[in-house]
Length: 147
Image (cartoon, rainbow, N blue to C red):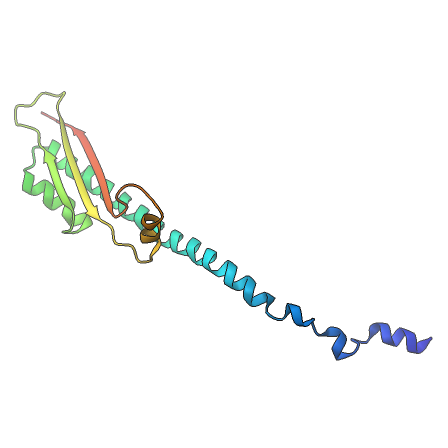
């Protein structure tokens, strides 16, 4: 009886613990299937997070540019204000308030900035049929003229 209890607690022979030959590469095959999906998700998180951060920065910059334009700023000061925030790669267009403009007029600033992805996620999306330009960020700011 003592011998029977001992065999239940002992790890057993080595042959009984070894997986069968058909399961030797199962972990490698599973990793080969799952790894590209995990990398795709990781690349998406990285680049979409960067794009969202740069879009928020561009939106803030055009809002400041529209504020400057509403306070009778010049085209050069509006462009400098926007490019100081987002960098010299931004293309800025603006509609300024005239000195005698009415209170119903608006100053409008629009900016475009190229976005460069760090990972290949955007090129993969375009390769598989994503429509639109995924590498240009755009923002518009509108502010009422103060007169």
